[in-house]
Amino acid sequence: MIALNLSDTVKASMIFNHLLKTGAVAILTECMATLDPRYTKNVDRVQVASFIRDFQREFYTEVELYRSRNPWSNAYASTYTGNYNLIKLNRRKLNRSIESICGSIAHEWGHCLEYYMKTRFPVIEFNHGSNSPVDKDFTFQYQLGRAVKSHVGGLKHEILRDLRIDE
Image (cartoon, rainbow, N blue to C red; front, side, top):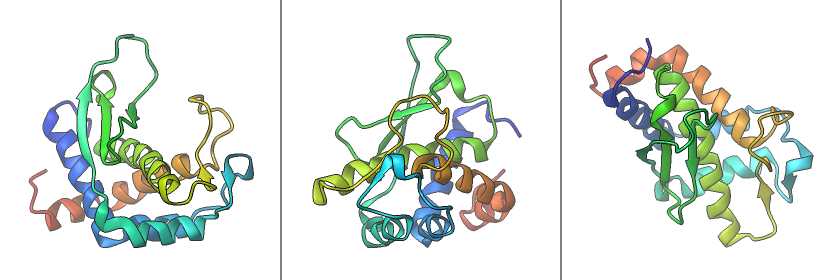
């Protein structure tokens, strides 16, 4: 199924919020491979999962659509506007599956979590540096995006049913 309309984007956002609320995001984080030490300082995946559990009630996602100025932009989404809950999805990159959009939301949410945690613990870092995806497979945001995409791909119908959303 390809997401061709706003309602699929709304579904993806609702699914990700559901995964946060049920604790699935923290569990997926604990199951990650070791975080790439080049992009991680003073924290590991188990501690990040603990942050998620401790603060998941303060987090939810608000998704806003934007249209990139550059029609050839590779960016699926962006974040950090000073609002730790706001994730912006590129309208030009929505012609894909709901689980792929959920993965993008999760990736950007990972940035939001890091920004939020740094306000409390300034010495930690679990970002991926530049915007290039090259050699970033074991960074928190990329692992989280892939894990959520895979999880949603396997359980999308059940999650949508639990949320009482028509497919």
